[in-house]
Amino acid sequence: MKKIGELTYEILANANIGLWAIELDKDEKPRMYADDTMLRLLGISEGLTPEEVYNAWYENIHIDAYDDVQAAVDKMVSGEHAEVQYPWHHPTNGEIYVRCGGLINKKYTKGIRLEGCHQDVTQLYHIQKEYARIEKELEEEQKKAITAMDLAVKDPLTGLYNRKGFNTNAVALLEKNKNTGIYTAVMYIDMDRLKEINDNYGHDDGDYCIKAIGRILSSIVKGRGVVGRFGGDEFAAVVSLRGKDGDASFFKNQIEGAFLNFNSMQDKEYELSVSVGIEVLAPSQEISFEEALNRADEKLYEEKRIKKTLRMK
Image (tube, rainbow, N blue to C red; front, side, top):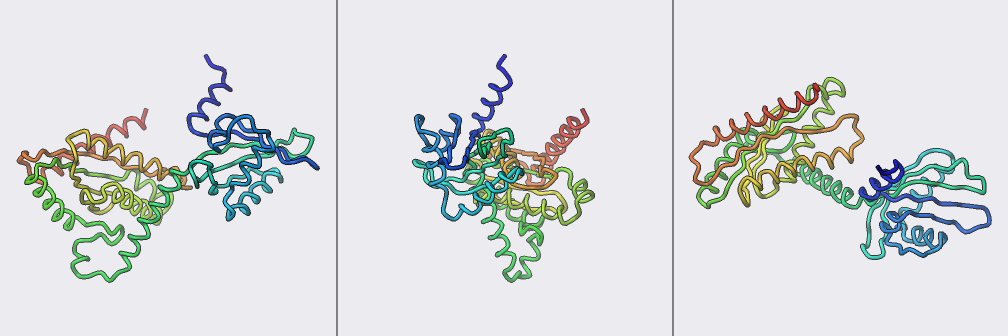
């Protein structure tokens, strides 16, 4: 069995988290000591002196981020834990986004020694940016004048289709896919623990969660289907598949992954999640939209039953 220290190091390396230490001694040049993962994340080759490693890191901090980085360093020096996210110029990958956090080593007596970790969060940054873009687009759309027809087919909270608008567009998409030989996924989606969040954190947080679900589902389905909110915590989607069942499973995995990413970027005390039931329809399948939706609903509640059972264990 590996030693605990070795296993921890391996876990950090697999998560692209590098470790560093910076020494700031009086009358000496700053020095940075970095493990192999840290050097790889910074694109720095082995063999550089600690002074050269420090320069390579410091000189590539985006000019607009220097004040934030310095504020984090000052906080560490004062004895507090500090964390900062900032753009950094990678020698081969260009501009990336990194998250650094650390503390002062109080046992170090020669001067100041800060120790911490570094992670490349570029992908998370761009996901967050995409969510912000979608949210802005939805807000701008909601600010436009709403016609009487809009009021009849749109959900005012999320901007998605309501049940009437969703059913009309979903049936049209199903008929189109039948005529063109395309498989269709009918999905029933239900938020987990809405009542618990409303009771413990307030209805504003509940509305926040409902709107977030709408944004996430819209970003995944995009131009391949229709998304609607039936009221409360119930949503539905109809999506054109590129294949058969496998593509439906991929969609479900995308939804689960999107909520994991969303939760990793929030500072809420709870996690947002949904349960999903999917019924896949072949082009030749003679089944009504309502029946397909009922089957998806049955699969949804089977998933919720399993989740409830697992929580009780």
